[in-house]
Length: 220
Image 1 (cartoon, rainbow, N blue to C red):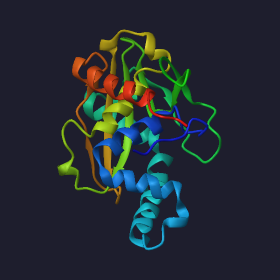
Image 2 (cartoon, rainbow, N blue to C red; image 1 turned 90 degrees about the vertical axis):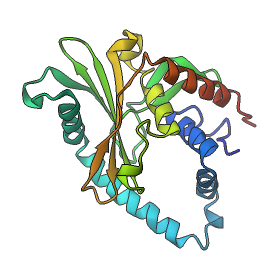
Image 3 (cartoon, rainbow, N blue to C red; image 1 turned 120 degrees about the vertical axis):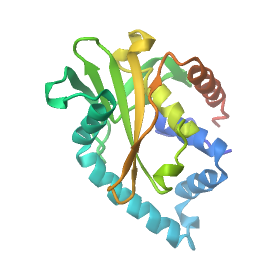
Image 4 (cartoon, one colour; image 1 turned 45 degrees about the vertical axis):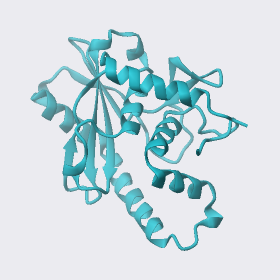
């Protein structure tokens, strides 16, 4: 099984954890992660590399305008006029190549005695009810109508982690919601996932079990 060594800068991040969950459920992901760590072995993978380049270009365009896009998601699922709503952006990931200085730490999730670190895409807070909505944006190659209503295991794990960091970690579970906005690679079509609550017992059981296994990974 693929894992990041203890001295890797990715070890103990939400990104690493969700990729590990993905690899547990998808053998192709295991291969992709291995090749990413061993670029000298990537000959003959031109098609995969072209796909990765296409993804990176779309990803860059999408996250350049992430606040507006996430606001549209909020407006659609809340059925509100975003210009007149009490919802405000309280966190956004920078998504550039510079060292992260806005990474969040969890107070309840630890890896190798260090707090789990992560950067949600966009987090909204309702200034009246104090509800929190975490919006994660994904570009995906499969047809949008093939995405399961429950999304994918690694994405559920990612959202669960993001709900347990930041100032919202300490508020009532029923006030914290998470949603994913899936886009196709053309950036012309999108689909919004089901909305998860941090109080969801099934989600907590599933992700807690995964995280406990991740914490106990061999790291040497």
